Length: 433
Ligand code: SF4
Ligand code: SF4
Image (tube, rainbow, N blue to C red; front, side, top):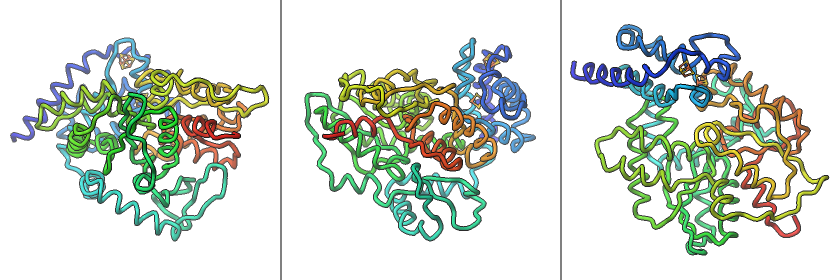
């Protein structure tokens, strides 16, 4: 009974935030999910209306409420276009956590989040083993996007063209790298993030190269883990709280001016969710999270605004053409969109804009796993817009968006490469490039 009362109190708390929504419907025209399904229940207004009645339904129809809440990319397009300033993402995430606390976490998610994600050493060991044996189950597509497919019919993978796990994750490569811990005075702690560490370590290598080139002092703590967003988005606040406190404790011992990441989702999570959605029992964590958020920066922003990178190459009219996809977690969440473009220009690329560059690519984390049909329909629109520019390369500041875009381009047999701006900038620093 105590738990029910506590949950009811949390739902009541949410109701205050729900009152801000005037049901104007402005969020409808920008919701990528609504564009595909045309269902009012999929748009923010519909979900907020559902949540208003949740206090009664949470106990009578928890599965139905959960199902509707989970049909969301958490892209923030609705919040970005909301004239009343409704904090839609925070409301949805809090509601998912309430429902999970009521229903309980499935055994599968418990294993993934609480046994693996919450234990960086175990996570590293398990993904290390998986990367060794993955070739038995997958085959390389040998294409520009470096994607693979399942060798056998798989209900989990379907016909995805996905990026395989790296044979040498960044945390292993780091052991052999010379990292300059002192520099021109600016000290950076580099937060790697799971996707970059385990699937795209070359982005972290490029980040180290670029930061070292600009004489930045670097600290890269070992046994960094996940920022916690996959767990939180699935309603597992316990794992999110644990990972937030774990990292704050690890980083408190380090001396740095900025925490920098090359992952848009990690940046947004550390800046916006660690300070506001930590709900564990240690109040000092929230204070530390606020302090850390103030010095956390996306790498494009850090290089452009703090390091003030000068153009390395002259842009030539016949030079390589790049287009840029704005990750929702950079542009809509943090307002960062000029800096990655400036970095691409500094790297000598001709920038050509695609239509709807800031429209969601359809990835949405677990949404892609649960609703691949809708996710890939949204992704196909992005792929068409990219192809229409006639570019050689599409850049994006979010590894999750890069996975989705690679899948879409690979499935359409495109030769367009997918790169992070920092990779292209790092390449421009190489002699003769
Ligand atoms: S969430 Fe914002 S944009 Fe959407 S209906 Fe409510 S007030 Fe309007
Ligand atoms: S977060 Fe994105 S997908 Fe979810 S309701 Fe808002 S606009 Fe639609």
